[in-house]
Length: 481
Image 1 (cartoon, one colour):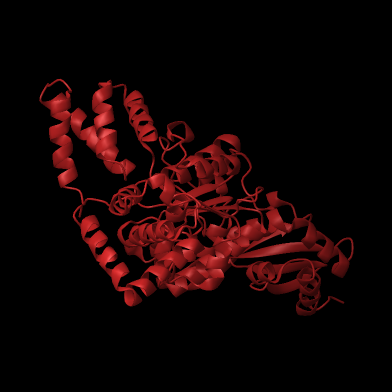
Image 2 (cartoon, rainbow, N blue to C red):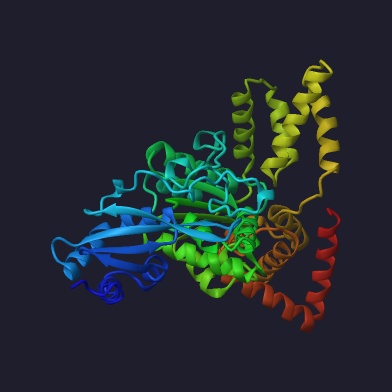
């Protein structure tokens, strides 16, 4: 007498549930439907081809033991893969005999596989990048080859972030840096570094699936998945990635549904030892509009900031770009560019390209005069940025206190107030994180900067003399804007 397929599968689920996490159970086993038992072969229906491959790759041994426990040593498993086609609204089973639960049992992929679909056709697109096939090797990493470690110049401004990135590239998912969050103001190299880590992984582990995606791209794909009722396929696609790189994660702010789906993807990847790399213009402590449960996960690994590079690093960056392009430029012109544009690497490289273009098109020699004329136009067309160093200089000159004393550990009242004012104005007029401000002003942490800002506000409201100093400094700093 044949056993009842519902009862047998229910017993199998009880065993499976005790051996995996609840989240994994809900994702990979709750959607399965038992179909029948014939000749001691249990047939189960799975939602997609990818679903089948995931079960075979990650839960093969657990399934073997469970089936044999419930059906005996000759018990076997058969898959029925649903082919879902939205344009005709019907499902068709695709049966796979897997007597030994071997991954190779599926020889002929069902029609859920072709994914290069015209958007106007109204068909579902399980792979959000519209790349044929769900096999891992078919997923393009979307990495920019020139954004590698060889082209990423190390300096004091990025030493920690670069070192952590190299460690991840050599051992993804196995270090304490998971997730690795890279944060900085715009144009300081966090996107370059994120790509470099992905490239390093691909060089060291050709079998690993690496994917770079901007947060905006991720969000738009999720919106499309919701419209096409393909949320599960969307989630399953991202959960198969070995190294997921998401750029500008702060763009999730104010998007609760997208945050929720990313939360589940994050959990699944992290639980399975996959590497997550995210970039942001802020550290987690300063992100607004992001759910606390997601922020807490961002803090699980390492948050490393990239600061404004010093003069020597800026010169090295320009020389590296010139070398890669096979172009020479006088040293004094390189130094002029590095001195004139100090807060944004992207803008500095843009000025370099403009000078080279002018020289080439007009067949003029690259001189200080030519470079200066172009830089002045370039800088004028760019919003002037106030830096922490500039604020330090203004505050130091105003109180006649050397910058090194402002940055010292002394607790003298007048120096502490000068430091607190420098911190307050740095937070108000620069895009630097609290951690970056504290690091440059006495190597303090972000909590000290927050306390300084609160103290300045209180003194402004209660101390007339302090208010006068504040207003005069504020006007002096604004002159640069």
